[in-house]
Length: 252
Ligand code: NAI
Image (cartoon, rainbow, N blue to C red; front, side):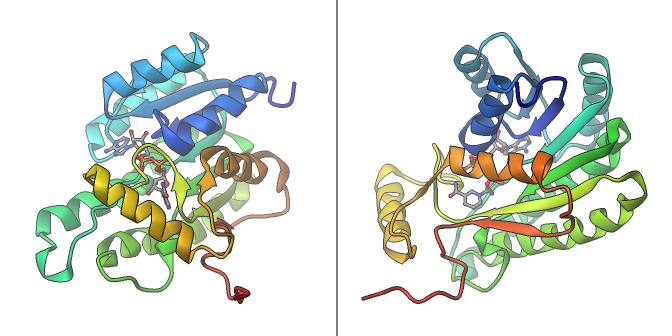
């Protein structure tokens, strides 16, 4: 089995891309622990993937939770081969309506959460292991309504560069996946109505050069490539975006 003997932690793994990555790892024989903030979603994930999946309710925007998580992971898995920071929130709003609370919430989860999760859990990583974070096609460029979210993910890419340098002595590679429009239960955006979701979906298909959404599994495969196969790659990001963030012409 491909991942036999590997231990993986997925931060934000209760649905969407994180859950798809957990599934592939379990199928490959790995021991997997996922976290999320919502206990009900974690229970649903366990029902879906089976008792082999370990779950911990933990909020990445809470320093106390991050500290406790490090202890729990140490007890349940011991040393780990992959730390995948996938948690993220996007609160899209017209520029004039962005509140301080929303600004702080997005940075607390996407950026500060990533930094301190890596700081507190990395002592558990085996030398030669891997860290993979989930960024976004929005980590470059500008889009109305997404300014704060984009900034959180741009900062996350900067963290990846810093982490890659910090962990060189331990042979731990650090990379990012950068998804475009991916079909997940939330579409990566908090609080959209059904109608907004439908329209967001249509826009995604229209603006993506490949004219479709990606699947959570397509992102999961990229995460696992970076984690276990890309042995000469660190400090970079891999776009999984149907060409959306690339300089390619779309035939008319
Ligand atoms: P999602 O965006 O709904 O959430 C991913 C996970 O993050 C969930 O398991 C959730 O429990 C966890 N999470 C959120 N806040 C948390 C907190 N405070 N503490 C702990 N866990 C928390 O799921 P999706 O759509 O699969 O997105 C995964 C990642 O991909 C996110 O980082 C998102 O920003 C990013 N992304 C998503 C895109 C999409 O089209 N779905 C596009 C580009 C990036």
